[in-house]
Length: 394
Image (cartoon, rainbow, N blue to C red; front, top):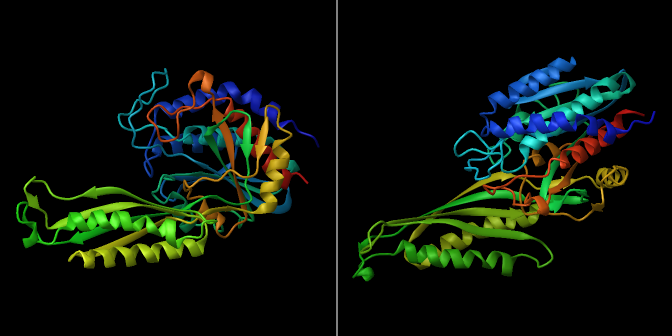
């Protein structure tokens, strides 16, 4: 049975534009996606789908059950927005101050609903179960972890055998697709450092123990982890992004605070970096006559694609009209909590080019002017539907 999934996605394009722009006008932060989740559940129920709400607080799960036994394939789409004030001038600009869809999740949610509309009529020809997962709180708040804890992989519907997920990607133009073997996105941690010194008059710093001086030396020393402790053929990022201390120009403060982010691919590199951050911070602080406490918060492991699935997605991408380039080596030090679902389930996380420089739709993710070429949703829906059907329509 040959089905033109791209043609089906094209038919839905006007609906996708309308639906996506509605989501864009009404963005919701992580674990607050009540309106978005309500619309998703309503759309899935209108098709006749079995729907579970409140998964991982505000997540939604819909099941498409085939007539014959077969694998359970999870399709995941994230829903949350970011705490950014939008500065675009479109007629669908965010109506919520300091909240906007600056990463394309409005497009992801819309693609997920389009895929549901495309695949639902084919359930009688399917072998196995499709589990459509609309996830809250991807932006560093633990939405995937919360859904896993609520049983999205093994209790809500059959146990998942494989997973597929995507991200609109404004680093590349419409028509570009990538599915990378192995790590595609990095593991992510936050670190917080509190430095205890001894305050003094700014004119008599020798009478105190300067935590600001310690913080400055720690900031510099932490960079040696990447340059001197990490194999040059591996990847790691250690960025100090927050430094706070003192209020008066003539006072050496008692304390200083630092914070930042860590990104790695390999588990062994990750553990080494975390260990060295503690060792360097505590050692440098002590050398400066201060005491430091390090608090490490693991956010997500690396997002690692199963090579066979990635290869198949690339092969299928070549069959999608409008796809002009298919890459196998797109990696980013950005992180993605889909990794929690892919830790125990083989999966493929692929990228869909969404930029259009001629229309000034090429601002980076998390920028107040972020927007994307909506034609990318056709490619995304067509490829996701094609990849899912590849496992179900045997």
